[in-house]
Image (tube, rainbow over all chains, first blue to last red; front, side, top):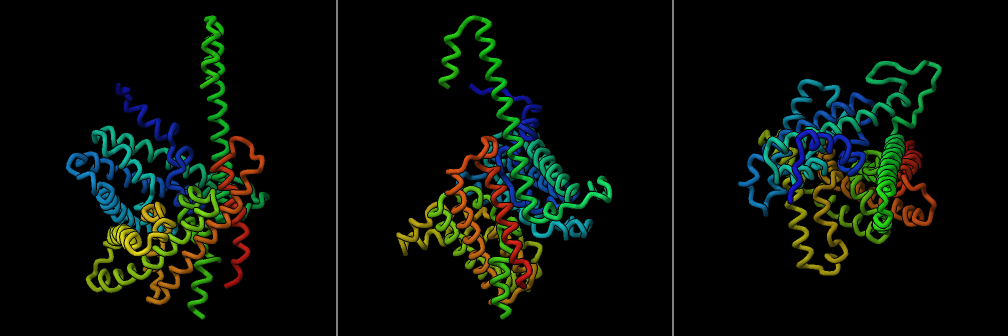
Length: 227
Length: 190
């Protein structure tokens, strides 16, 4: 039996339930490297979303013609094509941003998040569903990057998207814009997300137990505990 | 002297994992046991040196003379992927013990961004051939170093009382942050 999933759920899945950065820990290299400021994170998120969107569209359209033996190589070539487009467009239109992101735009090619979506989703679904999935994952990725970049930028250089938000008396935490700050902030963010998920799961669990008690079927509770 | 500086810079001061964030996936994934960390480090270093050689030849003898530099990304990634496949077949044929030691780590390396990053940095900084190879060796040594230290710490960490939400990936990230801080001590060396 196949559960019917609406397009909306498909989108939300990428943003929260299986957020590529916070839940699946995929594609961490650019996440840590470019998030010195929120704007860099935003640009990186958009670039990755565009590549994922186009790659998912193409892969899901020609999914029946790609021989399964060479599918990974074909995915990589398709992804590399769009990464080249993004890289060249950024070099021409936004030279400053391109310089700030450095080699991390070309490195989108080997981002396991994008390849993972092609393999796990786009190669098995219709184009419409695949692009919604890509957009959801891209949105989740971008949001995580902007939050991480925002925290580091506010604490590290008192600014958010280039606007000063903290007063001059606040001494910037230099560590936040250094590599160490990226690891520390992401570690704490993952911890907080885990804490929230755990608490939600426990609350659901308790509400089920309360429901069983209400309807007087205590034997089901034991079954639940065993699980 | 120049070569020595490139080596130290790639291995310690600008460590690929802790300063450039390249190869985080294997760094988090494979660093829970010392023995597998060393195998992974060896395999990566091996592929890095070969990549440094081949990518330099490809870039400077084919892409530049024929004005094809825009094909850099797809050609690098394809060459690396086929190279890894080829190396794997070769090792399997020639040395069974080495093949068993490197095992599943070889194919995983294809999608390791440290490898592609190495090729891209090499062409971006316009190294000479020898410099590029030394850069590859240094980067591999640095990767192995970071992975080994991390694995050592994580083996100890198993005994520590970490709060539940922070177990696993979060605490690894925080430890990596402290490690990156420690590596910053080398920054003044060059």
